[in-house]
Image 1 (cartoon, rainbow, N blue to C red):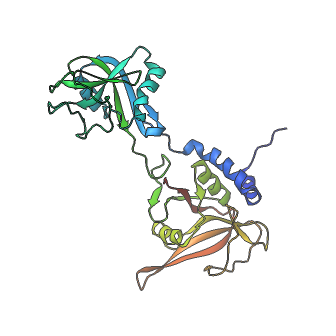
Image 2 (tube, rainbow, N blue to C red; image 1 turned 90 degrees about the vertical axis):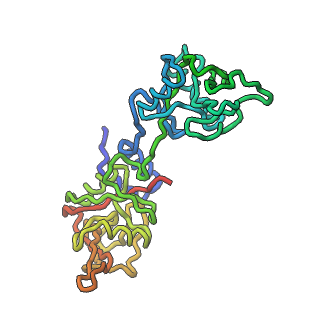
Image 3 (cartoon, rainbow, N blue to C red; image 1 turned 135 degrees about the vertical axis):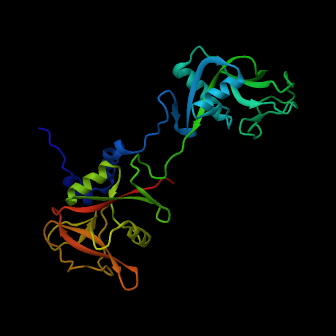
Length: 311
């Protein structure tokens, strides 16, 4: 007989097997993680953090430059010796008849010295020592073949080419634009104003590739206050495991009660989950800080999800 795993079971098991459950959570949330995408005809290569497209229809250098520009990309040139292998990767994928491509280098100063389309020098030596330039006019361009060898050619000659689009990776690793990055905490937060039970809130954060907020340090405690509404309770990832027992975070850490400001007595009853509330000093026009409360986990309330930002 097959049994389904309820999200409450997942959180409860986390207290006993945090490492194993963390892996399960990662799988559950993976569908919401950021998936790089630019255009369907561009291929993303994670090692270079960029998108590439092999154009098999030959064009001269200027035509190739303009094609890439209209696609929001630039004419490819390898920024390192290793990146030159991108050409072979694209040929293996969908361009087996292509043997060479024109690159984003030009001899604009007629001196045999090439520069990139971005105005910089060639980032690494591409010719052997003693190489004699074949074209020492402004019409000299560089070709790369599938054997990773470079040669010169007239820019008027037509060759296949590659367009490159550099990836702008968001700090928060998710497609959800409602996550707000906090620099000092290196975390991303999302406030859910739609009320849910604690278990539903826990599940929602997991599905978004995040965790129900646990406030691991004083920096987080300070930063999160700017996102909250005064005197509104929000669920956090802390609950009691049994009546009269200690409070634990969903990451398996026991909550130290010393120094915590409680709205009511922290006596833990059955099915108790913790909320936080930002208090505001009307007279001094400033925040007092966060206060906590123990609520029935089945009471629908707003909540906050958090995820670690990209390093």
